[in-house]
Image 1 (tube, rainbow, N blue to C red):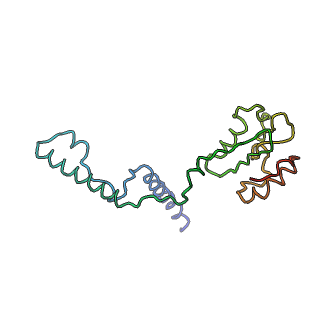
Image 2 (image 1 turned 30 degrees about the vertical axis):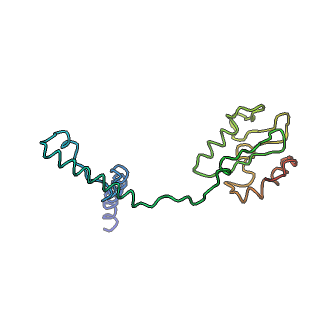
Image 3 (image 1 turned 90 degrees about the horizontal axis):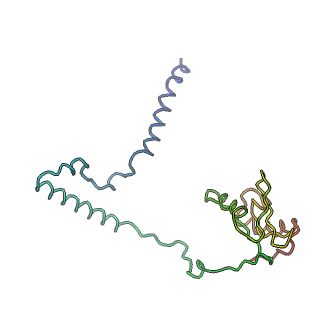
Length: 190
C-alpha cells in the first residue's frame, strides 16, 4: 500500500518543485521592501482629476527620496586588491623569434576554452599554428623553426601538466615539459 501511495505522491511533488523553480526565474526580481510602490500603468493612463495627479506626484517624489536614501545607505565597493596604475597599464615585450613562451593558464567557466582556441586558430602571425583537421592540438612553432614553440596551452601541447593545472602546477611543470619537447632554450622563467 505504501509503494502505491508513493507512486501517486511523487509526480505532484515534482511538479510543485518544478513550478517553484520556474517561478523564481520568471517572477520579477523585486525583493520585498526594496521595490518602490508605483501605481499600475492603467491608473497612470486614465489621467484622473488634478487632485489625483498631485497625489501621484507626491507619492512618486516620496518613492524617489526613499530610493535615494536606500542608495546612500548601501556600502560603497572598496577595492579588495588595489593595483597600481602602472601594473595595469604595463607593456610587456614578447619576442616570438627569441626564447619567450606564452603559458596560457586556463581558468574554468571564464571563456578560457574559446580564448585558447582563438590563440591557435585565429591569430594572424608570420607563421600561424598548424592545425590538422579533426584534432584539437595544433603545432605553434616559432617563425623559421620546426621544434621551438611560442605557446604552451592545452591546444598546443595538450594536457602536459595535467587536467586544469593551476598556477602552482604550471610554474613547476612547464620547464620540465618544455625540456621533454626538446625546447631546452626556453627555460627562463619571468
